[in-house]
Length: 182
Image (cartoon, rainbow, N blue to C red; front, side):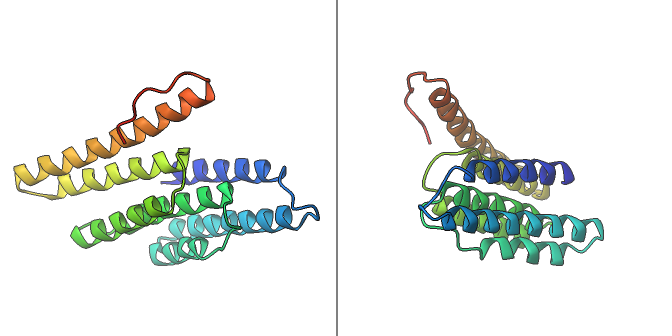
């Protein structure tokens, strides 16, 4: 869990660095976005500390605060930060285990999917988290047929993540696109 949090922090820092190149002519857009990204980073850090103390409820509350940040419209960094928060919140909701936890975690994944306007690492990561939720469901279920169906859902989510990753890699390498399946 802490390794994933470290990865999220690294990506937030990268977003902070990329945000430095945007300006509305007076610097306010840059400054606003940097402040919002800094706030999100601090909230993730607060969640990490709460988790170290075993207080998953307080960690959940900290990540929910990230989702209340209103980034500038059309901000890719803002979108990425919110997608990351939806994925992290889904992980946190899954901690208690059980059907209700899985339902709530999948609801966060769906909220993130609706928010996504483009393919990105964070969009692919949401699908990876969805796969983890379905895996947890498969492990919980005693009915072998239902467990197998949950594993199928996990595989489909991973296939969506892989398709997004491959699409982005081809774009970054300037390779021709292949037909997408997501």
